[in-house]
Image (tube, rainbow, N blue to C red; front, side):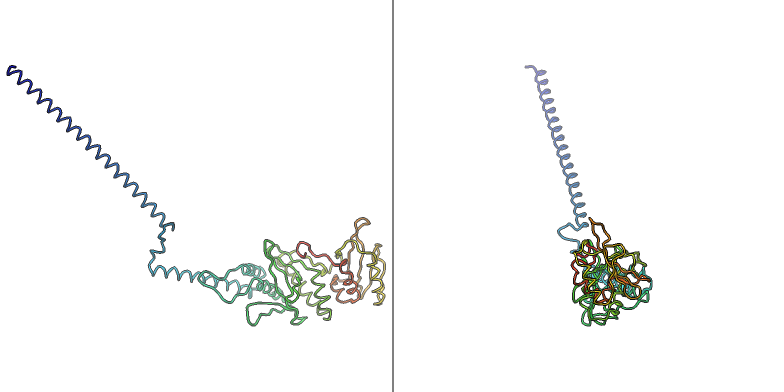
Length: 375
């Protein structure tokens, strides 16, 4: 091999080694760049994850869903400020109650009276931080409303009293003394309203619903109380008490456009008191003939035919007749007087023989009350 050939071989070997070294360096640079890109990508991903976690934790803390609730981070001063504000809210609730009660007891405006009463019926005095140990109930506010409405119209006859040892109201009639005494019994469920009830017997004299603007009288309860239980009381005193209730109902009609069913308290001459059974047993009217003869009153046949009438004092005429047809009887009782002032209830209380006849045949003669309210 010549010297030129050796020189060419050495040169080629050097170029090969240099190329290999360059390739290795390029490869190392590529690996390093890829590694850096992976590390950079990982850092960005971790940063994003950390950012999302921080944001979620922040929202969780704000929404109160964190296991360590926000209240745990409150300082004692913050805790006491919250406590103090809760007490203030409870006291303010009590002050609002007193404003409604002031209005109910002092106003002379019937609209304000109804507004304050309806607020008090459902008012909750107690809060989580403030409770009031002495409280009246919605039943008491019904009585207070009734008493105040009569008072605004300068009408007397009802006496409102309070129990000596606890918060409870009741009312009595001035004409009858301290007994019987009455309260309102609230009706639960969707119907609402309240019954005016004799505390001793539990008799519901009438039903009142302020929301539906209605008052309904119960003929059976009035008969049981005034014609039976209080039979020894003078008729004029019993009628004075009953007139107070009629006056209250008329106030509701005039001031608040209530509908009213007076039942056997109705005084209109055109009123027909329908008996419980549309077809009376044979002999029912004949028994009245006998009772009237013994009392020196003359019973006559009804002008329309099937029935009878009795002329009483002061041109008052009591009647019972079949106002239906042969196939559909409808027995009714009527009272007519020149001034449209006498009801069937008044006749029952003032004429013993008619009351005794009515009570003896009561299963058939009982006057119908609203069946949806008085079962």
